Length: 196
Image 1: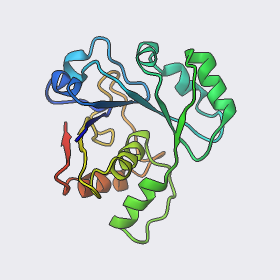
Image 2: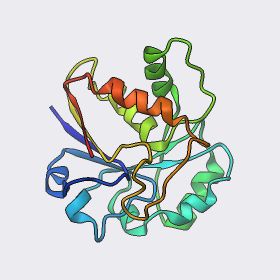
Image 3: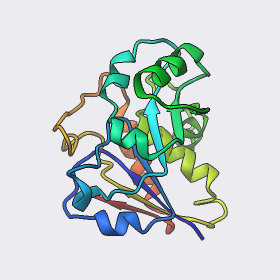
């Protein structure tokens, strides 16, 4: 059994750093920072999951990526609908990353949303965190095979703001009400635990 940790960018009520670093796989998101926050969120990183779109409208998001975090991993997941070579090349140029990327489309998010509400339609794209969470749940045998254990830290749908910069979000870009429903739905499974 593998222990997987998803480290959201929401604030945590305790210092989980030591327990986070004991996981077999640690996944972080977007502008995650490690240096100076090790006690809270640990220092290990295996995968960085970042925002990606089919256009270059998120070039400013690339500029915000933490170079130290990028240097610690070469495993990059991009949340997006399809491959975008221009986006990948810009990311390589800005960050110095070399290698291939894995794209996570929205299929897993849509599947879980439809388990909650059969009439669900994708009208707003999911946040990077919730899309990655749904991908891990369905692809790491968390609930179907009960093979692995998933611990999720700092997922509160932007209620507390980011731990590194206090940024908060509104419901403009994402369907945060649905994302909260996804989190509540996943809490029923014994192999998934949420920590804030």
